[in-house]
Amino acid sequence: MRQLLLLRHAKSSWDDAGQSDHARPLNPRGRTAARAMRDIFRNLGLVPDVVLVSSARRTRQTLDALAPWDETPIIEPMDGLYLAAPDQLLAIIAGVAETVRSLMIVGHNPGLHELAVTLTGAHAMSSNGHTARQLAEGFPTGALAEFTVASWRALDPRAGAADGAGRLIRFVRPRDQSE
Image (cartoon, rainbow, N blue to C red):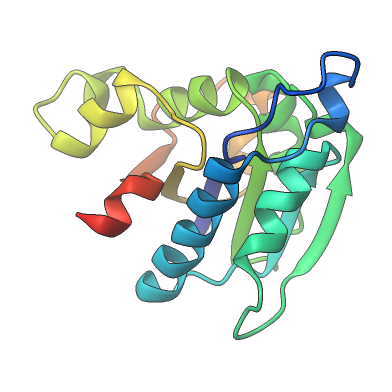
């Protein structure tokens, strides 16, 4: 089994109207939330082998806030993750080497939320599971969804088997650190 971590960037700033969306930084609340997620990662012992991060400034800053790692992952910024749709995300994940045990994607909504819902599957989303219900309600900034999947290749969108292909382990938000 493989571990797939989907992390949405923390809250970004809209202060500079002339700034491109790609260049928007985290705002103060986002920086605080990203640090809270660092504590959550540490408390849960989450250390990915590989991190694929959108090239957007806010995603890279969110990832930077998680450091230092106990074991530094391989980090690859990718333009293709910027505002990627679920099928694009699945294609990227399906291309990861099967030797990678744990993969983290740091990206954006709506793609991450739609991907998480797809991986969980309609049956699990309609069940009475509290975690699945929270995920169905939304994927707020700074949130993390952790899945187990059989293999990366099994998520290839051309195979059409992504619906329900993951087992949702947990869904945590920055505010969960204080609860």
